[in-house]
Length: 319
Ligand SMILES: NC(=O)c1ccc[n+]([C@@H]2O[C@H](COP(=O)([O-])OP(=O)(O)OC[C@H]3O[C@@H](n4cnc5c(N)ncnc54)[C@H](O)[C@@H]3O)[C@@H](O)[C@H]2O)c1
Image (tube, rainbow, N blue to C red; front, top):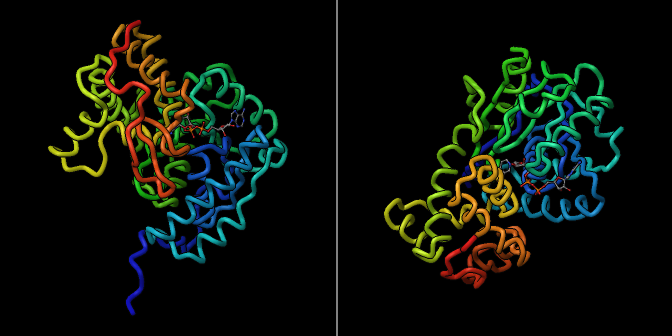
């Protein structure tokens, strides 16, 4: 019998970049990154302030682990051992014992600044810091202090083992050795790495992706077409596996909302405000995305689309 076509194999030489990793924020992205790091043999801690978030993360990690095995990303034994070795904690002192602290808390500038200030005070001097922010740039986050030279963005894409692109975004004060170490770490996680030339909100992929989502949301919030029709239009012509609303359901509508709300506020553009208000209707109905079985679409237990939400079937949003 031939061996299954695993996408990755665990590191044979052992990682050269930071070895003890703490991922801060045990949500959708944090859990994926932590599991991926553990599968590649890194000593990994997943930290959250909320006890309940850690309970939710255990379920989510089990789902991600199963998906990795089903999709033949790693051998089952590797995933099982990685899961067993992953340390979930809400003790800051434990989480601070790391060579790299990678933050993946909600997309709120003040919160991210607070998290880095806390870890800066608690971590040993050599610890590197990185943010997984989708739209904030590192110089914004480290402006209020900390250790800016040891800080850059390390931006992952969901699902981490499948959409395996990481953008490393240093800011002007990031030490080159830090950029190199972060790039080496991302490569050791089986990621294709782009080290960006300059800071840019939206990074590389999301700059294109956000423009595309913005267009899709504008069509829906203006009542021009239903979301399933907009997805259908894209899928039929582009022959991609998912349309924009299906993809946004995977990203999670809280994140989609935070990004749209941020840009609506910064630009004052009425259409962007309408788009943020459109997404907000789904949050108000506790439809946070595929993760919870309900977003723009309804999902069955296998995560497959089972219907269309009736939150805003074809209603124009008026501000
Ligand atoms: N969702 C995506 O597709 C995606 C992709 C790339 C990057 N990102 C970025 O990753 C970050 C997290 O997004 P997410 O979708 O995983 O969010 P999420 O809401 O699923 O998870 C965030 C977690 O952070 C925890 N948290 C909040 N405050 C904290 C604190 N002070 N200390 C420790 N933990 C804290 C929350 O309890 C929660 O478990 C955001 O910056 C987002 O822009 C998201």
